[in-house]
Amino acid sequence: MGFDTKTEHNTGYKMDISHAQEKSGQINSLLSFLPDIDEIIPYKILSQINPGLSLDIGAAAGVMTQKMLQANPYGRVLAFEPFAGNHPFFRQALQNYSNWQLVPKAAADFSGDGAFHVSSTVKGTEKNWLGMTGYSSVGFLVQVEKLSNYNQENIETVQVCKIDDHVSEPVRLMKIDVQGTEFNVLRGASNTIDQYGIDLIHTEFTGDIRLLNFLDERGYCIFDTDYMMIPLRNDPTPQKLGMTRHEIRNLSIGRQAFSGPVINRPSDFAGYCSFMAETIEKYGFWHTDLFCVHQNFLPQFLSALSEIYMQ
Image (cartoon, rainbow, N blue to C red; front, side, top):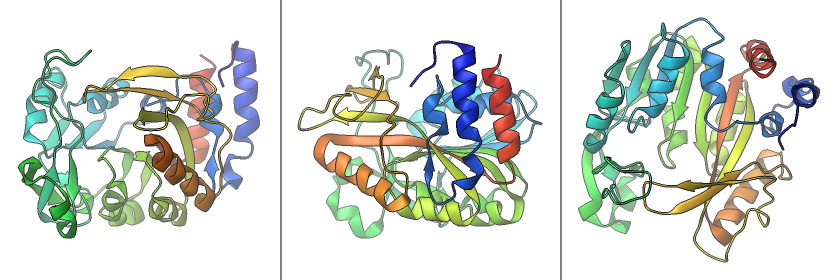
């Protein structure tokens, strides 16, 4: 729910902050009460802290890498993107920036070759995607035992690595958008998290409780943000899903989706993941972005948020 004035906005925000550090083992709703939460907060935070290394996992066309460098031009970004069709768009987007490196690999919990499924690419006729022919944001790694479930014409072999193979220093921000294999990315970054630390993790989430437990065990405070629904069945509406407000999005796959905050949802991990699974089964593709803040970084995170929203 948005706030009409800075005063109301700051008051609501600070009330919830007072409980933030107590809510381990739960999904915290703090960010749901703030305006403009989707994909913006982590990059505004970068602008408020000392520069360092950030990671863009599933970098696609480089939009988030670009945001990282715009927020903190003295920082560095290591971007991972295995789909060759996206590389020209990434390099074009970053041509006026320095301090970045593109790793043409998929990130997971192993190193070697992997099967990568790309169900569709932009044809050039989709609304808002002019000039992006050949681009895809829907590729993902397929487990070997599940290969027979997919059209082999949509499978290609890509190089796969663990984040731990490439990083040996503290990380400010890691963004993960890999279409369902986010937990595997985290497992492949275990040593980086445990030995060097990652302050803030921004990850897409569809209901894998293993991801929540992994982060909770390592001292992260987990916040949800806006939710997005791609309707597939049973005519979902923002009202049915409990959204307090929503906006329409035109996707690269040629479909429309709607997104917005959902306030009344379970906060415990088991109930929350059941809520996600039941919504997906009933209506279609459903996900949120989680902002996962390490407890050692939480005071600085909340202080930076306060500065941002008092401007």
